[in-house]
Length: 366
Image 1 (cartoon, rainbow, N blue to C red):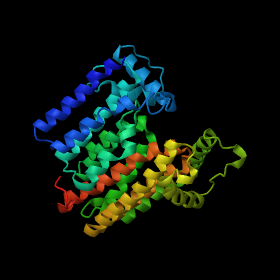
Image 2: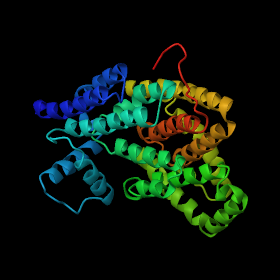
Image 3: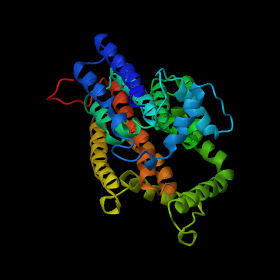
Image 4: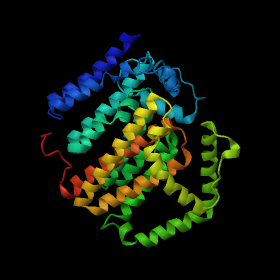
């Protein structure tokens, strides 16, 4: 069955070669993208058993059925839409669980080429998205995470370019495949408009924020109860006992808990919390990610403080919400990498759009 995945690999390599020959990417970038195209071969049942991430089997099985025109509409709607979107990716075979890993790698490869050639992603942010270990991992597995990331980054970049209706339309699939991420994209829209001079929203931003808060005020307790319900379910799913769970009952408790959860969500698992080698490696990665984010915020603030503050507010909001409800260490790493990438790419792209500035490596010509 290994040989069925070689055509999938070849398609990715051809896309990279054509992009290089067309002058869209340089030689060094095409080399690393080609090297990373082989990663799906060395993950499932090589570095770890495929059962370590059992969701893969469901996505693989459903995409395979769709490719054989065996339509099963009884699946969970999230799985159903995600697999339909994955099934249309132009790779020939879905014969092994690794096959769908190549689908994810194809999406990641095309996204990096697009960001470099059309959105002028350069310097440290480019190297970050290229070598970010968690992105390399999850973009090489039979999961929907890469699809979710691609939809989010497309929506964010379109919104930064003031193509706001198109950005919203692009984000709409998230309402089904990752509902909470759709609402967090809406949070980004609001935060971005709040800091955007010249927009109608900016002119009346304080009034509009008051109106938004007034609009959700009657439902705030219901929202908190829903978050608390999900939080308790995930707490117990991760092995926690009902008697040990601490409920969130008031708005002040919700805000304080979210602010406290944000930095921990970024750093979990901490090195002393790791229970296996994989988690320990992730904890070391978190330390480097934290250092890099600090570096990015400092570099960005030297050029435009508002851009840095805006993205810091957004990261704290997103991580605060996720930090409240996610207890599992593996799930935390899996859920946070799209937001980290979006923040890094978003800051870099805004600096280029507004100031023509790259966060570059002076000693290296990219």
